[in-house]
Image 1 (cartoon, one colour):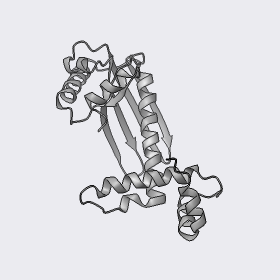
Image 2 (image 1 turned 135 degrees about the vertical axis):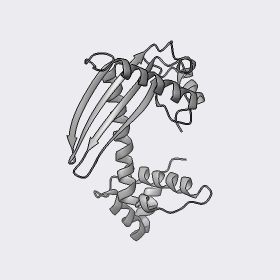
Image 3 (image 1 turned 60 degrees about the horizontal axis):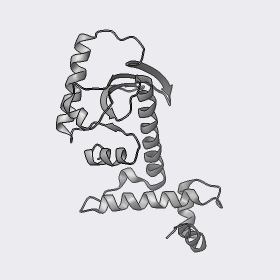
Image 4 (image 1 turned 30 degrees about the vertical axis):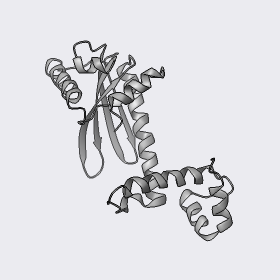
Length: 202
């Protein structure tokens, strides 16, 4: 959803920079970046740490993760990336292993800022950490993964409502309990529910 040229243009017009994951919905850009890195890997059997390559290994929650990143700065040879005003094109490979299975995935990125491989690794890691934490809270507190609303805009509307409620519950500091228990308190105590709803700024 975020990899749209109009979004990138809007960010640049406001004097900011973007780092966007290149998705299959941008066929030309996706193909161009993927083919560039395929050629690079064919011709570069070994990488030395530096501005264009970095790697990081982590072990947490019983899972081992190894991330590698390759970057191309000022990609003048990539015509489509140039139209996006991209100054960095990157590929990030994630190898993940836990007690049951291992998997590997590669994601491609473009950025309007000149970034080193280490900077891309840090930025993409933080992005997924934020997304994973939000998803975890929504699943634990709202049981979102078992939601079965599929017709029309129901799924999108309910997801938006959950995030609004989550933000309201986070703003309340009177109950020193978790989000799930705050939800229960709203169902049990009308005054508390009205107080939480009172956090809405119109």
